[in-house]
Length: 640
Image (cartoon, rainbow, N blue to C red):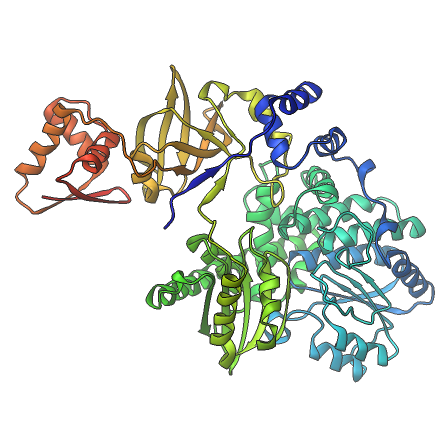
């Protein structure tokens, strides 16, 4: 595995000083803004104050006006409207927005969400057949979070004398579907600047414009809450209009008018928290997604639409149970996938493609994401059933997985997605050649695994960590794709008081000190990084967070990683302490000494009345020519 290398951008001091002076920010905060490609004062103003006065005009979106007029016609003529949406949070919140507004407008509106395993993504064959046989009656179909790739199926719907409006954000191919209106900012001839809107953000913009005609009162805040949920959950770049939706939507969610969302927040155990982007992405969204993954996404839509307290509480609890089932299923498949990857050395490939019989299709996307995180490579996870594979892919920020699929699409039955995530259907017999083609494609474009390079916003001195800096950084919330949590680096510091903490000892805690100033550090689930931390890394890398204990607030660093020293390890051994360590080694009869390093430190200091540290022990072992050792988590193995 490659060593971590820090990447820091260099900026002109004058540029930093001008931003600091104009917006009353520290130089560190100014560097963070520059790292977000924010140089123009107007752009910085919009970033710091993401107000709706900066919201892009809906008229800039191709076909949006046309689509709105068609819906108004359908409402006036009492036509049956069906909102057809995807089964993830983005689709669910898009469907919910349309249902809420159009119901209030007196429309004859219904919704349809396909079952993930039975029907799959997009306009399903089953849905088309029901339309053909008049089992589903509709005059107008509004496809949200899907439809861009459905050329043939929308053609069939047209032949049934029914109109289709597509609101989607997925990548467009050369040919667009023959829909009445296609509202997708990624169309070549769509003049909108906000190309990164997801379906729920696009639905929000569309419905705000539609409501200029409908004039329904006291509804736009509810639509905003739903748009915020979908925007954060779909991991789109939180810049431009997305940032406006997320920032203002979070304010509304903290005093939510949606009964079902309030009950879901309660059952999730975060009712006493200020809801931030983290809570949406990692606590609320997984529970909403669990409906579509493990059962039927309609349950999540019903939760968002209900006005009954008891029904909302019941459905929120149901989603909680489905989420627990999702976790268990996901864990089992992840373990099986890792076993296959390790056995077949798939981690040596440029891209990992792994498959298994009857893996639950609802969780393969999450498993792909976890595999990409574990191995630092794009991953494709495929569930096999009756010779057909259905799967999901997750990528890393510097590799476009959709383009990779496009390069080998002759082996796919169908596929769709975007740069970071994609779905596919493939014949089992084509999986191996498809995997080879993906790896060849990566070789051809000169892809290299840059997964061990970490971008840091700034090198920071311990003395610069204070509540002013913490509060400045908080102004840059919400964090997410396109606006990551600022990453700070510390060098020339001394490590103090390291220990393992947590119920299972999986976390490490220590302090970084320089010139009598200290900052506490917590490394969640970083016990596996202990050796790197103890061998005098050239830099410690982390993010700031607030620690509250017994009513006292303090700022601490959450450890992300460390930048290790180069090939030369400069460490001067303390001969007295080395003598103590050698004494313990020589007295042990076994050829291999095994000890918890923290217990060993305590024992040495107690018996020999010394002040040796875990850092000194590991550094001495590393520097000594005649020593062989392994530190696995907190267990130290020394070969005599």
